[in-house]
Image (cartoon, rainbow, N blue to C red):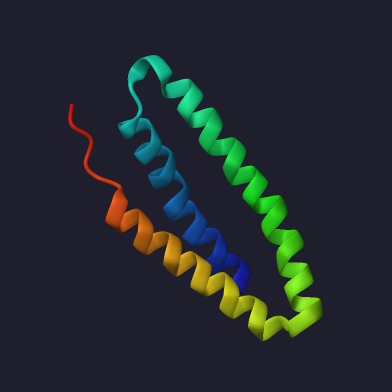
Length: 88
């Protein structure tokens, strides 16, 4: 059930993130913006997995889940504060 919930959540968020990057990028550099976004997103997947493993070894699984929740909430709050509507 957790994997299903994760899949549904990802399916809802992923297109919105790509659309946000596309909306904020000028058409002339949209491909570069999407490539940059995907590069850093993929680096985050790899680095996040490694850091989560280190945190789990050092502090346990509960601390790792809490750290992931705090980082996710913080990134959402920062995005809500700094991302504005595109002016087209």
